[in-house]
Image 1 (cartoon, helix red, strand yellow):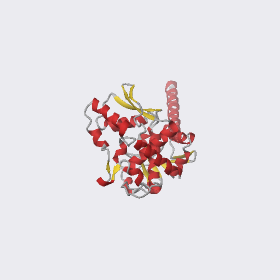
Image 2: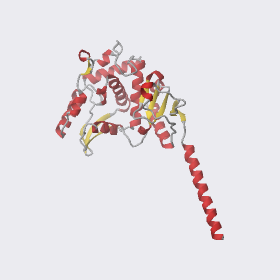
Image 3: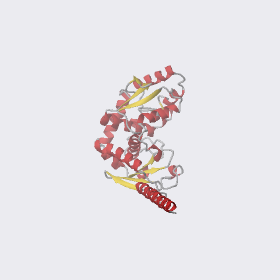
Image 4: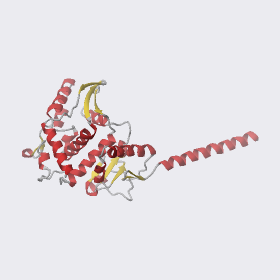
Length: 293
């Protein structure tokens, strides 16, 4: 009888500890926080209403942020503040964490929605390049490495802030179509051909698709480094993305002396893929002038 009683007591103690642990874990999940003056919220369908173009892709469920996610978000915000980029964060009203296939800047609302899956400490900016290139059959022994390496979350935040600049200062259409005006034409004409209905002058995505072997891969990156006006492969998907990517790398190069290297089995085979040439220099000067206004 005593053994049974002791066993029951032990069972109650274990259950109590488990309940306390559960409560502690629940307490670590929060709906929102403010850090360095920046508001971050988990998505709540009762509060947040993304513009219709985006709303259908957002999972309509509440998002609570766990301790690891909060730590990662604060780390990225601190990078802005510690490197004199805190003023850029004032471009947005808040960051909202969503379950969505992609992050996006809801330009009319000045709100940036961040895909929750991207808030991972092990996903770097270089990893993001690898992921995009693998979609084109990128050679598995090659990868892209940042120097210094940054979290992909920080890259996304800077990129999406660039979208707000192109909308607020350059009057790009917020839906993604290009509307030429005297504010943005100088930037767009560097890489996009007005005579061919604003076609990418370099056909960069077609070049990547046509890579079939290792030598063609290396030839592509030699060309990209020396001759391309773009700062990434993704830049070639549209004029809005071209500006947001140039905006991103303008700040990474200026404030962090950042560069991208092509690596083969952990050995660097090509340094500084975004070497500043005539066309890239024009884009960087354009962004500098816009941001100094």
